[in-house]
Image (tube, rainbow, N blue to C red; front, side, top):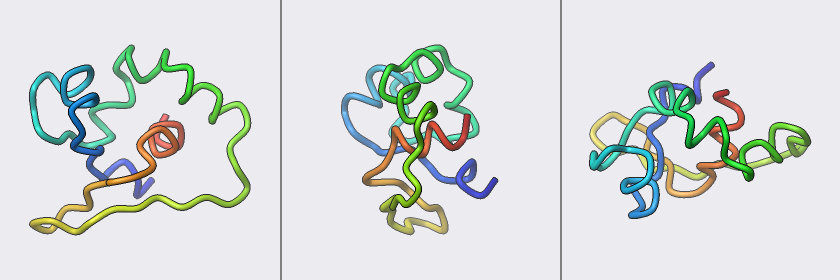
Length: 78
């Protein structure tokens, strides 16, 4: 799945709670973490994923870094 190659949003909340202080991490390394697997927003999205959705990212140094859509991307990845 292509979204596994995306990098998660580099926001303070995700960096502090999920990334272990790293600025960004690939979704493939995040989606198995308990903080993602037990996240209520992610679980709700997984139960009823929207028929249409959009993720927003930037290409930075040959990587796609999400800037919006982290919870949806995490639901897709998991």
